[in-house]
Amino acid sequence: MAQSAARKQFLRSFRSKYNEESAEMSFADHLEALRWHLVRAVIAWLLATIFTFVFIDWIFDRIIYAPAHSDFITYRVLCDFSHWAGLGESLCMPPVEIKLQGNTISGPFMSAISIAMIGGLIIAFPVLFWELWKFVKPALSPKEIQYSRGSIFWVTFCFLLGGSFGYFLLAPFTFNFLANFTLGTTGAYTYIPTLDDYISTINNIILGCGLAFELPVLTFVLAKIGIVTGTFLKSTRRYSFVIILVLAAIITPSPDWTSQAIVAIPLLLLMEISILIASRIERQKIKEEKEWS
Image 1: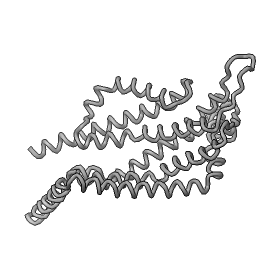
Image 2: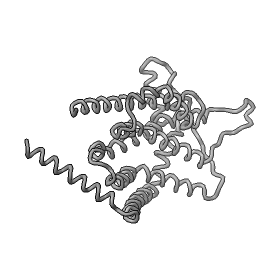
Image 3: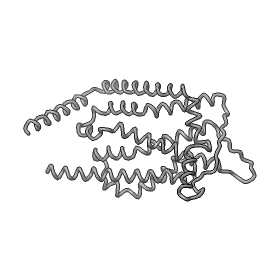
Image 4: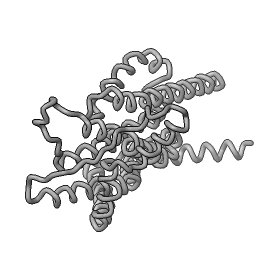
C-alpha cells in the first residue's frame, strides 16, 4: 500500500516537473515548436490534396455530383422506407437532375482545386488534430491530459458523422428543394446553377455539419476542465434552442422548413446529449469532492 502511494506520488512529481519545464520554454521555443507542427500538418494536408486531385474525375462523378442525380441512394432509401412504412409517396422526393454551367475559362480547373483541397482537409483531419493536440499537450496539467484521452478518435468520429449527415441527408433535401423551386409562372427564369455555386454549397453543408457535430466532444472537454456544468447548460436550454434554430437557418442554404428541421433536430439531440454528459461529469466531481473531504 505504501509502495503504491509512493509510486503515485513519484508520477505526480514527474508530470509536474514536465509541465513546469514546458512552461519555462521561451517564446522563440514555442514558435519553433508551432512551426514544426504546422509544417507536418501542411505536408499531410498537401499529400491528401494531391491524392484527391489524382482521382478528381471519379470523386466528382461518384461523390460530389451524386446528390444532384435522381438515383442518389438517399432518394431511393427514403422512398423505399416510405412504401415499407405504409406512408405512400410522402417521403419520395420529386425527381431531380441538376445540370451545371460554367461562365469562366478557369472554372473547371479551379473547381477541381477546391474539391481537392476540401477533400484533403477531410482525409487529413485526424493528422491535423493530432498535431494540434501535440502542440497543446505540454501546457496541460496531468489531470487535463487524462481527461482528454481518446479525444482524437471522438473528434474525428463526430466530424465524419456530421459530414456524412450533411452529405447523405441534408444535401439531397437542399438540392431537391432548390432544383424544383420556380420563380413565376411564365417560365421566364431558367434554373441552371454554376459549377462554383454547386461545389460551394455542398462544401458548406459538409463542413458546417461536421463542425456542428463536435458539440458533445467540446462539452465533455469544457465540463472536465470546469468551464461549463450541467446545471448551467440546463438553465440556458431555452436560449440554446433559439441559437440552434438560427444556426440551422445559416447552415442550410435553402429556406424551406424541411431542410432546417432536418438540421435542427439532430442539433437539439446533440445539445441534450451534451447536457447529459455535463451533468454526469458534474455529479462525478461532486462525489469525488465529498469523498476527498
